[in-house]
Length: 165
Image (cartoon, helix red, strand yellow):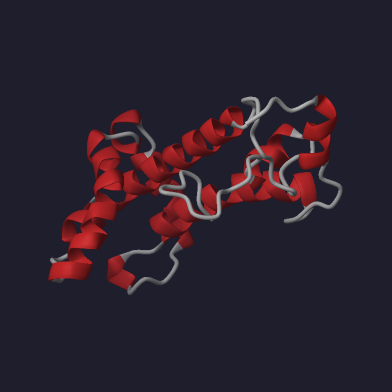
């Protein structure tokens, strides 16, 4: 494969002119509000009331669980990685009770949020290597929008796609 000139790179990777998801403000809004609503829904739903939202106790629950030992635990981190393996095993051999997962669901949410931010950041920074083909929607020049959309073009037949939508 030969070297590409700056003119060829500009032709292969045109600037993004049309924005999706409401543009930069939409990307910022989704990035901030989805984790907040995920935590609020998790803390508001209680098994005693049958999963109905109970907003009056949510604020006290946030203060109760918002500490470093509960938010970032090794159990939640390990469960996030083991979840995919578990799904394959369940598809093949059946299921076991989800009680352990339910007991540690808050930690799984926290770990999933951290992992998704780290994966998106890694994919964004790795797209700056030379010779990378950029996505049509992810080359706007704005950090937040390109980070949210995924700057690098996804392969047609990937062996493993780190940031998949």
